[in-house]
Length: 546
Ligand SMILES: *[C@@H]1O[C@H](CO)[C@@H](O)[C@H](O)[C@H]1NC(C)=O
Ligand SMILES: *[C@@H]1O[C@H](CO)[C@@H](O)[C@H](O)[C@H]1NC(C)=O
Ligand SMILES: *[C@@H]1O[C@H](CO)[C@@H](O)[C@H](O)[C@H]1NC(C)=O
Ligand SMILES: *[C@@H]1O[C@H](CO)[C@@H](O)[C@H](O)[C@H]1NC(C)=O
Ligand SMILES: *[C@@H]1O[C@H](CO)[C@@H](O)[C@H](O)[C@H]1NC(C)=O
Image (tube, rainbow, N blue to C red; front, side, top):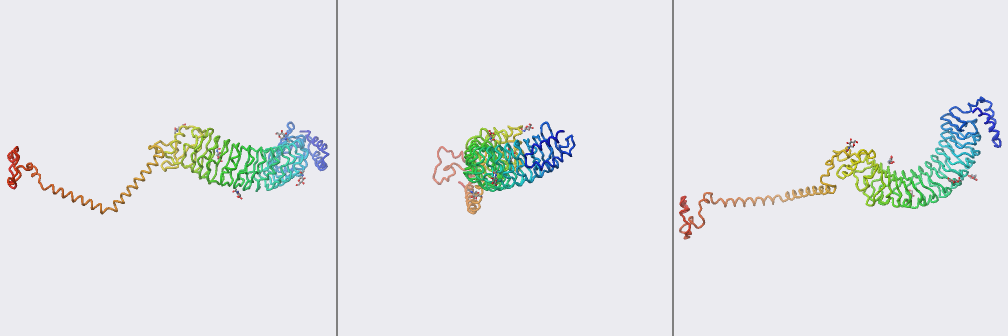
């Protein structure tokens, strides 16, 4: 540390080939004369300067110019969260830097050729400043740089060959700027670029095919939070090394069948938070290696049968916050037999999740169906009992016999924190009760399955209809019925009267027909075997009958 001043002077002298040395030397000499000889003051207030490791790290502070008299051999310089306004010529002294972080300052411009002597610099962080412009002379000299971070600035345009000197650049972050125009040759020379962030800008069209032709090694491309509306056919077809494409919040209304042409190696695709009216099945079906797909926060109402046809390697599927989604048709995931993680949460209108007709999901371990509008769930939808994580919370479930299987499953998994509780919404008497706490009879399964319940329902309705019809018929025919009833009762009375012509006494005393009781004058003799006196002897024959 004590050598700080003299070494700075020596450095300034060795720098003399630079045309700007005269400009620099004046203030520098002044500084050397002013600072105390112990050199400790050369490390600015709030900074840590380590001559061993050659690192300078300045904490949050109010530095508004680059410190001029740091050890010129430093390799790592961090001045974050200060008030730097620009990169002045003193930057030239620190030509041994491999890492430079000037993020979160107030820089408005970076003068041309600011890094002309930084042939060892590998990482440059200029993010979160107010830089409005970069040109093809801004980064001259940065031939070894691998990471350039310009995120969170005010850059509006990327000019012709802006990044051309950086042949080793691997990561370029231009997110959160105001870029609305990209020269088709802006990225020329970036043959090793692997990650490119252009998200959160004001692009209205996907950069031209020519732009991407310069990037044969590009693996990750972030284009979200722009307003593209649509993707031209073959826009990405030269990005044959691409594995991740992020189009989250890119204002897409549709994705035509050839929009994703050429992305055969892609494994992660984010299309969430767009305005897609339908699942872009035709565009997706060629992405045979796709492993993760995010499609939430779009405008489609249905996920149709075979929506993800061709995606045999799909492991993770997220469709969350799709506010218009109502129905997932049966067989929607039929082709996705390698599915491991399915997140269909916060789709506030989703109330139909139809059973899969085809195939199982042998690898499925996580199913999140939280915050939907589901009132019931089919047992045949997924291999529920094989899951490690299941979240069905915040759905208006109707706790009836159809959910008996779920109750039993959840009870069998009691103690597993990976299984969120299922709370009943209906019927009213079970409102807010956890499904697992309901005794079997409460679910009304005494007559077996749901089909039987339906049959019983139909029977009840049928009976009611029958009774009503009968009542109506009776009412309309009431007079005739009354008459009929009257007739019947008259006849009955007559019969009764007829039978009464003989008194009980008479019946008891009457002899068998043709005997005794018959007037002798009638000429019919009684059979000889009959002893009439036996009949007549016990009681006197009434005078009237003799
Ligand atoms: C920088 O861009 C200008 C046009 O904007 C061009 O004329 C010039 O040749 C470019 N310089 C380099 C080094 O590419
Ligand atoms: C690009 O990267 C590869 C592997 O990381 C490396 O072998 C190659 O030398 C690099 N090319 C340039 C021009 O730096
Ligand atoms: C896609 O959306 C854009 C913008 O809304 C529209 O102009 C275009 O006609 C649509 N294309 C298809 C195939 O629907
Ligand atoms: C499912 O998606 C929601 C919404 O995007 C998210 O908050 C949640 O963490 C996801 N759950 C899992 C287990 O990935
Ligand atoms: C689940 O387990 C807890 C203790 O781990 C127990 O208190 C609770 O009664 C159990 N619930 C059911 C429905 O078995």
